[in-house]
Length: 435
Image 1 (cartoon, helix red, strand yellow):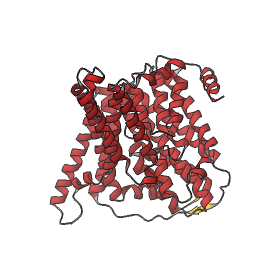
Image 2 (spheres, one colour):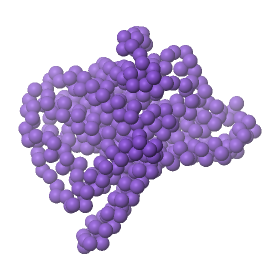
Image 3 (spheres, rainbow, N blue to C red):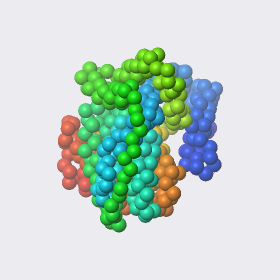
Image 4 (tube, rainbow, N blue to C red):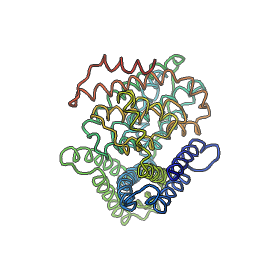
């Protein structure tokens, strides 16, 4: 059908524009939002006749409901992080945790641990910027700075897979009712092991000692209270969902409303001309949110045109373990958000362990190439020593760490669900794919 061909062409065009964003200097949020909305316009005008679609409006409403849930959750989480970052709470935490003097090898492990932990709480963009700021402040030689930056990118992507607050693909898979929070949290174990493995592989060439600055910005009582409120909101989100099935969006919006009310009370008692706490909702990364809106609209249009059925065939020709592993490799070239959305919309049949493996693959696979994730693109633009080719030199180490984490996620998922599996079988299956 001609309309299907046009929609596929628009999708390919969107992916190409995303890949060359830094070359043409055109924000991917603009292009994906344009092409995503245009796809639905074509469906409304030509779809009923060309595709035999019964009710395009109803399908659009269902798609918008899914997007709104994701969008509002990210907005609430990013508002918390924007406030804490602007007030220096995040920088102060770094200086409090780091010693004044430490060896380079110990600092590499510490950097990986910090990036991993922080990215579980904040969005990947903020976690990457903070982690790279730490790396650049060390004043290391270029070759050593490169190793720290490579680890930071991998650790940021790995840290987000275990919590819905850390990675948008994890949140998407959770909202689709494919995994439970109690299962997702187990992914932290293989993900952290893979980060430590990569750090070990990056140790050669390190051996000196680093002196760290310990400057700390003064903070108000309100700032510190909001930090504790953010942590309590995250813990409450996880606990209330497990105990009572309360949607994470509702808990996070409740926590954000408390933050706004506290700010209102504090601002009435203060003569300070600082930015009002409600204003921090205006300085979050709205271009990131608009990108998610555009790409999810586009994937929804492809589903409506029955163009995602071919993706399900990948799972028909090979076991889900291998197919999910390939999805992770593909996410190093194609943005993981549309890939994950495509798998979800294709309604692929998998058990809990296989969905957990996909969660890890989609979240971490983009680390294999510098252009494969938001963390990598930020490192490419912020760290002079990081180029496509310099990062590519570490591909074997990155692939090994990713593979170990993936096998661990798949095996561990099988032990806690109703689909136990043998570790040797998992390794054999993955090995046959790599060969």
